Length: 138
Length: 138
Image (cartoon, rainbow over all chains, first blue to last red):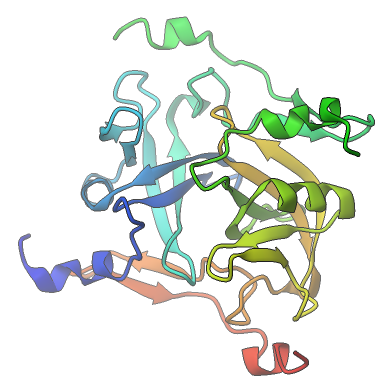
């Protein structure tokens, strides 16, 4: 618990100037990328301890247990660290099949269309559930 | 070219305080995540214009045409933007099958082993080519 020896895996991470690291959530079965959010040391510890993704909300400046309102939690299968020790991948099961607050499976639902002279971001994935009904139990 | 109208897709992006956005490179065929690096406006423009990934090296503070030394360039298939407009995915073909400067396919080659009381990062992917031979033509 408070054993410092057990924290070396956390100290291996190169936290940024704000004490954060980007964490990419990837579907453990399909390998689709669902979202990217940020973690601080406490959120990563809680993620490992609980087996569910806990991020650090930069906008709200608080711990964010993903799905706490929507029920769209993310169960952790495995966690990977990159060569520079400054990016994480979380392989997860996405409850409800919706990671995005817009009601879509993935937050990456806009694709760059370069077929015209002026490139444009085109929405290429459907809304699976109206966000108002997702968050209505708040 | 210098037409401002044609830059609206760049202005749709929420660049961070340093004018950067994280870009996740993902294999277009297997969906394996290869690396995450950063882009500024110029590097993203060059990426779209040339069809090869050009990042912004934060350590060297210069444009970084991925593979310029190693030959391990990344051909762009498609580019996605997330709901907050602050993260990109690049779907790519990785030349040489090596994205990582350590000579591995992916930079995410360490997995968290939680089977012991003290978690540890375990290397789980092989070196495919000695980095010394990759960069010997520099």
